[in-house]
Image (cartoon, rainbow, N blue to C red; front, side, top):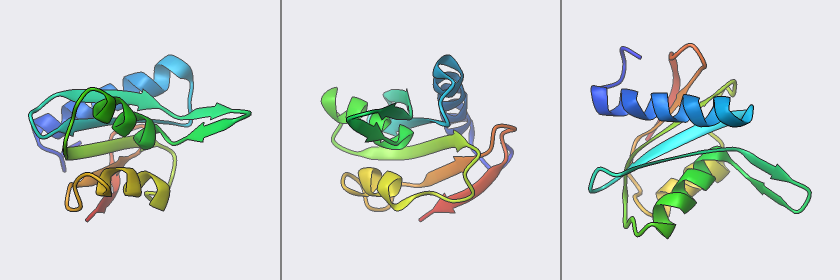
Amino acid sequence: MDDLDSEDAKLVTLARSARARTGAAEGAAVRDTIGRTYAAATVELPSLSVTALQAAVVAAVSSGAEGIEAAVIVGESAEITAASASAVRDLTPDAPIYLVDPSGTVVDKTP
């Protein structure tokens, strides 16, 4: 997590916890523009599939967030999916999104 500042490292901790709680493929966390944080895990139901980052953004927006300052996804993926990135980009086009493996290494970043 050396590539992350302390606030973004906190997002990694939240995303890891969300992933561990549910045993999901991914966990994600976002920080809104006033510093509040939201975490979620991948949702896979017969009638609904939501990436962890989409779920975290939904939690933020449903709590009144108007923008995203930063986002983190923790999982085994090699890249940030368009579906996940779009959820953040709809609110804040230039917010950084970090993809972090379970060991804490940043493997991808946008923008």
